[in-house]
Amino acid sequence: MRLLLLFLAPFFSGLTAAAGGFDAGPQGARVLGLGGASTAYIGSIAGLSTNPGLLGQWGDSLLRVSLGGIGQVRRSSFIGQDSYQRTDQDLTAQPGGYFYATRGLGPRLSVGLALTTPYGYHTRWPSTWEGRSVVQESQLDTYFAQPTVGIRLNDNFSAGVGLVYAFGKYRQRRALGQYDDPAARSELSGSGSGFGVNAGLYGRTGDNLAFGISYRSGVELEMNNGVATATGVPDRDAALYPATTDFNTQINLPSTLSVGIADRVTKKLLLTFDFTLSGWSTLDSLNLDLAASGPAPARRLSTARRYEDALAFRVGAEYLVGPKLTVLGGFRYDETPIRDEFINPEFIDANRLGASAGLSYQLGARLALEAAYAYDYGQLRTARVNQTDARVANVSGTYRTATHTASVGVAVAF
Image 1 (cartoon, rainbow, N blue to C red):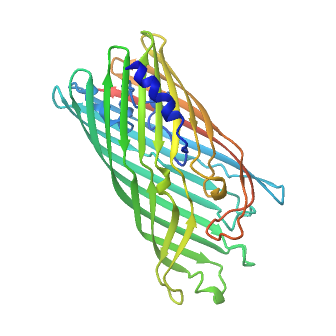
Image 2: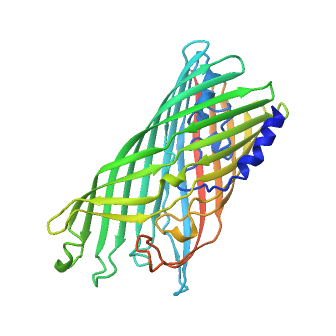
Image 3: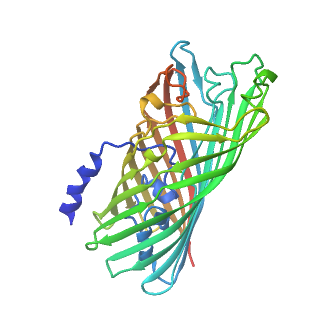
């Protein structure tokens, strides 16, 4: 089995795909400390959202709960190609959180619930920056609920499946720079939901080596209640930018295929490895179907995204310092799903290299405090305006991005 897993490793790491995107990071303090390498990790029930197959390993009579908060700050800077002027994004925090609960109903059957915020971003540029006609502010928030059933197949194998309900909110604001009025702007907001499935398998070949594989389907967020508004528009352009218009849109969240290995090297040291392929290519365009409003006819506005499928590699380590203290560390590399010609200041992404650290401290026999921090550094990206393709909204220049993520939570068993 070790030889088979080592053979599969270069296959996954050699896929010519891209990762990253607006994934909000590992959904749990302990798995954040591991760098997200949790597909084969049974040390925290936060692995439930990554691999439902782990659920069968927590099949005792205890009610296990893990909950906490997550905060992420993404900072991007821009230097204009013609102006050579540097602009920094306004400081914004993307809040999130998680809640997990598991309970065994018998020697082979377990149930669980995962509430997470796995995708999102909040971008806000200064109102007068040179790309204000492309975007000034944009935000996406998602909330996932996943009731799950797990089955312990035998002493070494378990499987699980969960139904995913997702709810998302999206809003965007940009200036209408073609008008003299500096207050002229366009805003849109909407919300919607969708369903998916998450299934996984966990197995171990002995006391030291374990593996996991999971697949979570993509989710289509159908937003049928959108509202677009425009202010500061001259009467002559009322048909182009009506004061209020209803719209529909759809935001596709990616599928994920994860393969993981966990190897207990010593009694105190555990190493974990994950490869994750994300189906970002379903996010091809952002299409707004605007309803008729006054003199403005119904029409579709389309902005090209052309995301590519995504690969990420993660490795984590857990070390037992003493009876109460466990320290964690992680390393990750994500390729970006955004091609150079489709870079957009609404959400800046790049190939990212990241490191994380965390700890778990036992406050009692069944109560633990968990905390972690992760830092991701993105490579320099250069965007160029394509004058022949109006579907690509952009401003020429270079971007650099860094991401800070922190999480604090508790794990308790009753």
